[in-house]
Image (tube, rainbow, N blue to C red; front, side, top):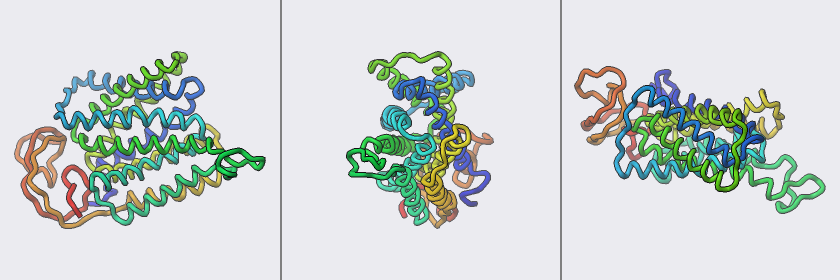
Length: 358
């Protein structure tokens, strides 16, 4: 077993999630001419929540039961990832090229990894740390204005940047910080039905942002713009988030975030190919640095002898080496089950069964 195993559902869920979210960045920017940033954030999330609600209703899927503590984790994730982050991203997109904004979103993976290590004690190897440093270097390069800096506070005749020119990049990095916190909070409930989590987060964030947008004086755009925003939101936020929750369940926050950091490259390529944005030296060098960092992340191999303590919990699973209980269900299924003590060695991620100390 390796981290690039074709059968690894966590890896492929993360990559599919990254593709959908990455494609959504330039598409969202193209809508900013017709929709205000705050209203667009609300429409994107409302589209994701309503789309998933229709899907779940058509499949007659039951509502999962969360404990009080799990409900608080989910509420905090909604506020961070569905409230603050998308609004900051829309404001950032309004003042920066979509290709640069797309690559700046790699900061989410770095911040997710840092929080997973600092707050949730996920293990970080040398490859993860070096890859994170390369991604940070690329993000800083993209944040540096092409005209350079004068005194950092005012314009000059040579084309120096003002402090105000840094705000779009700063807003996007701050959005990444809120999404990183969201990722780690969502990890606490990642065993729950992924489409339900994404549906709840989409509806809550969508309605909240729409209400705030109208309180601040926003007006409805033309119907085609509303429908386009909601369609983009369903794919880039709803389906993408459901897939990312699956990745969190199987990989842990830091590794899922690492694989998800391929998303900005999708957005950057679409921006250059379909929206004719220029290919600058900064974009090229930042892409190389970030690509190297992502490669180090996705090729990490973590294997050692480890012990599993007795554990009782409920989540979706198949009968693998960690689920050997007896019953007739085949394939993926969900029920309460007990894990007996187990000592063995294999390649693994910091998922729900491998959150041990190193």
